[in-house]
Image (tube, rainbow, N blue to C red; front, side):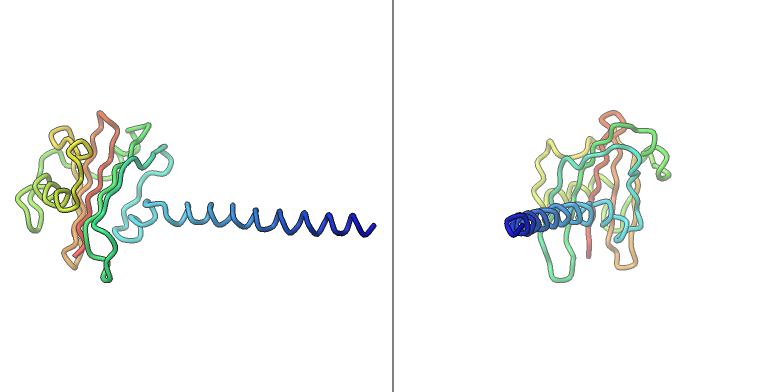
Amino acid sequence: MKKNKIMRLLSISIVVPIAMIFGMIAAWNHLSDYARILKANWNFSLPSSSSYQEIYSQDSGASFLGDGIRYHIFSYKEASRIDEMVSWQTTEQSTRYYDSYSQAAEEWLNAIEVPLEERPNYGECSYWYQIQDDNSEMIVFWDKYQCRLSIVESFL
């Protein structure tokens, strides 16, 4: 009888910490999903019903004020939900500080040393641009042919 009690206590002392670790990992993955950060910072929602995977990210590093540059590439299995998510532009426009979306993106991506092969093929992309009151900017490049969504953010 006493042996069963000891075995049950031992089992519980092993199973509970393991379950807690798996729960913490699941919570971390959910909270660190960049789609949640985009929603909080820009009120921009990635379509979660379309299967996507983050395939590249680079940023300028942590800063006290949260300023800097961030870049993420998402690969999608289905293009239709992306096509419908915003009013895509097919011609480049100027941004607050640059003559075109691609010029702004190139400046920002150069600053964080993104390799050329990880950059959007601007000629194949549709564009979406957003600016905030503090003049922070976000440019989204949608390459329908490669099913890649590239997001460049410059926080001031």
